[in-house]
Image (cartoon, rainbow, N blue to C red; front, top):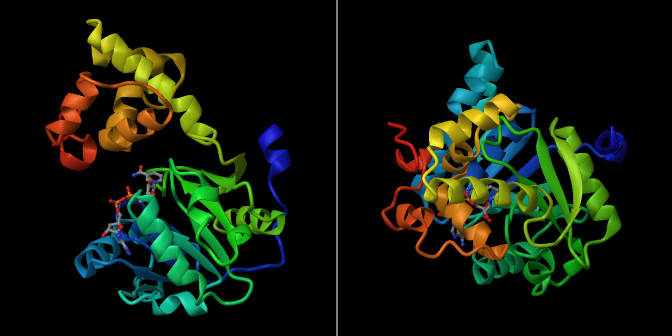
Amino acid sequence: ELLKGQAPKKLAWKPLRAHVIGAGTMGADIAGWCVARGMEVTLQDVSPEQIAKGIAAQGKLFARKFKTKPQRDAAKARLIADPNGEGVARADVVIEAIVEKLDIKRTVLAEVANRLKPGALLATNTSSLQIEDIAAGLPDPGRLIGLHFFNPVAMMPLVEVVRGEQSREDEVSRGAAFVTAIDKFPLITKSVPGFLVNRVLTPYMFGAMKLIEQGEDKERIDEAARTFGMPMGPIELADTVGLDVCAHVARILGFSSEGSRLDRLVAAGKLGKKSGEGFYVWK
Ligand code: NAD
């Protein structure tokens, strides 16, 4: 109820077109979700192969959401490969979801900012950088907000709407309105490390990993958490999020994973579900 009280009423503003930069795990699925909610989306990436792969991966979502072939074909037609970023100038919402590197995000957003339509919303999907650091190089830093989607996008109702130190209040409200318009739940958070959800979830997953190091079985930990009432245990969750992502967020939050099982798995390329093996084997 507390969270629901914060949700904005649907604003008159109806975003029709989105442009997503980065067609990796998150960008492609954010694009697919927006298309499934009726928007037209242009999808940009430095790698044309990644765009093609990201678009193809949305077939499953469209098959679930749309029962008839004409509906599915219409959805496919609304998801447009855009390697040169031409869609920026038409978009009502631009979401950056490229690699988690501050300098690259700054460069890409500075270029995009010059081509935005007046009134377009500008957002980053960063999970660990501060919004104000990314915004620092922009002509209008108050325009940037965070829209932090969770993985897997189609399953996770919550989106953190992150207010950077300089983010303007109307941009934050429109961010929340956009999240509502695509049938997700907006949670407005401050731009502090881990925002809100990762700040809570990371110690939970890290605590479980510590127990494994101390000889506890991962299966027992996960079953205990599920029996307690969590939809998924902490170790399964870490494998789902990606162990490289977990290790990165843990570092940002000051947890030392040096020499841990987590670090050894990441070093061995065992990143969880996405690589076929992490704490568990997923093949
Ligand atoms: P990813 O590595 O799967 O995808 C990143 C994509 O960005 C790649 O396809 C790459 O080719 C592309 N890219 C790199 N530089 C580019 C540039 N200059 N222009 C255009 N495209 C470029 O990464 P991801 O896991 O999808 O994460 C993307 C963002 O989302 C990061 O900021 C990450 O912190 C955040 N995030 C990730 C998760 C997660 O669970 N993976 C969850 C929430 C938020």
